[in-house]
Amino acid sequence: ISIDYATKRHTILAAEKQLSTGGHAFLTVKELKADEVLMTLKNKTITEGVTNPSSFAPAMHFFQAKPLIDQSSIFKIVRAMPKGSVLHLHNTAAVTAEWIIKNLTYRPEAKMCESEGNIYFTTRKTPFCPEESLQSIQTLRTKNGSTEAFDTWLESHINLKKGDPALMHADINTVWVEFEKMFSVIRDFVNYRPFFEAFHMQLLKEFYEDNVQYMELRMPLSKLYDTDGKAYDEAQVAGIVTNLIETFKASHPGFVGAKIIFSKHRGVDSGTAQDLLKSYVKLNKEFPKLVVGFDLVGQEDINQPLTSFLDELQEFRKTTPYFFHAGETNGYGSEADLNLIDAILLDSRRIGHGFSLYKHPVLRKLVKSEGIALEVCPLSNQVLRLVNDLRNHPAVYYVSESIPIVISADDPGFWDSKGVSYDFYYALMAIAPSSTGIGFLKQIVWDSVRYSSLTPEERTEYSEILQPKWDRFLDDLIAGKLF
Ligand SMILES: O=c1[nH]cnc2c1ncn2[C@@H]1O[C@H](CO)[C@@H](O)[C@H]1O
Image 1 (cartoon, helix red, strand yellow):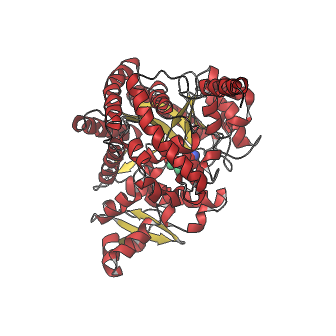
Image 2 (cartoon, helix red, strand yellow; image 1 turned 90 degrees about the horizontal axis):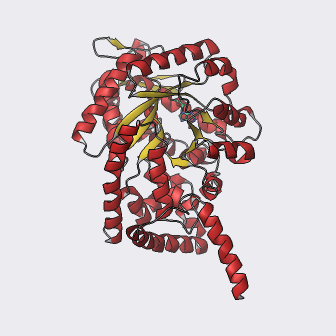
Image 3 (cartoon, helix red, strand yellow; image 1 turned 135 degrees about the vertical axis):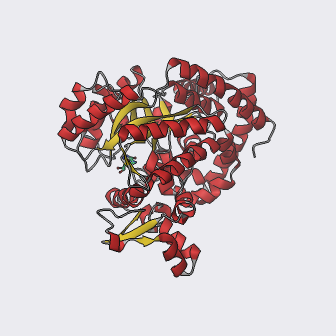
């Protein structure tokens, strides 16, 4: 290879690195040292993956890769890393299924019913579960004989991994039907105030233990009910959540907090959409530090696009920060894909998924120039069947051009994940170029602070908490303590 040719090659590679996420990040001496440690492990894993692709976790489906990931040094490092913010997370699906089964379903109030082949967890009679159909879960468990078999069966209703293995290869609509059912299985259960509180404390705990400092939760703030039949409306629920977060913060040093993006299913009519927007404005007025944005959720391919609510969304645009799901689809020019245009024209602050954005050169430019971060959820897109091998995830493209992204978990409890570390593992090993390590992670972590909805004062406090954690992480990595 001539010197001339080698120089050209090197120049192109260096230019591409400069363009990529974290490729131009300034690295301190300590970060460079940490990068060396990380890159040695990463290179080894990738080299082995070339000769042995069938056990190369970054290319595999999470359900099969999880045991391999759990054993890997890279995962141990990623888990120990302070990850900053998780900005795309649906509360109902954020807690490990196992915890729900081993804790909530063991409480004496826990009941369930079976109706038309579906099961529902609850503690009271509901339209799905009339009085005569209700059964105590504990009684059923005792009758069943094998606690383990019974609990596995229970868990299969809220954990796709424990369900039909064919779901790994099923079409997108089939998986979504099973996925939406899981929300119905636990909805009423989690709306029982004592369970709601235990559930959300566990949510905060699982993310705190995963080294996450701050979260923005997509939450519907549905009505809660209590033992004595008392009901709590949206504002009262927001009050309950405020107390939970404060209580958690007081006993967990280094936790910055959590906020809510008020989110409802996109299957509503435009009149209801208007009411929801009014509710948002009211909630934000009463809880300005807690309820900070609005979103419409649900499978985009088969539900109404944002244009169905255009008048309402335009009317409330000035008073309402939007965080729309958009482009969570394999379509190109479909309504779900074109939600991206409306999300951007309606001033969405970030975009949920933005999976199909790479197909739109003009939108891509806008997203970059206006600093709209994409909330990338690798595992979600794999489990919900948009992409199989995460090395082919569109975020690869966003990373190659430094389109701002944050890494998030979406619904980890429903696919046997926990926290956001598994998503970060895939981001580092499947999505980022093989030559990138600490620079990429540093950029992603600090971007998760930058693109959050925190106030300037909160952000300062946040950075003061995050920086020493980051430094300690680097020290531990260099000292070989993490793996
Ligand atoms: O990845 C996602 N894309 C769109 N909607 C979602 C996703 N994950 C969960 N939900 C939606 O959130 C509702 C519960 O609040 C679920 O019913 C589901 O439709």
